[in-house]
Image (cartoon, rainbow, N blue to C red):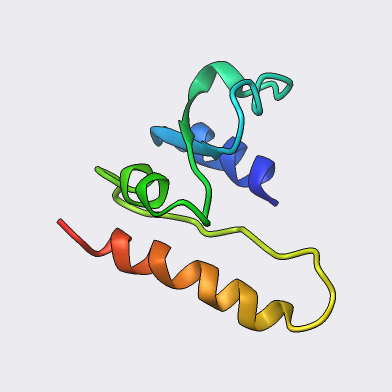
Length: 88
């Protein structure tokens, strides 16, 4: 989903920042040269805060692959991203 979204956003002329856990994570995509990779980890408050600075919009496409109470874990992880996205 994310790679298709990036393609669409670039085709429409948007500046795109890709949240990555590790350096080089987007290098194999055809659109790699058209985006700016930004370090991001939903479990690191500093990376969440710095990852959304200056963004007009944030698409949160993170989903836990663990079994069990994944919905609660996903919601808990998404809340700080939402909160930081609304701060000036």
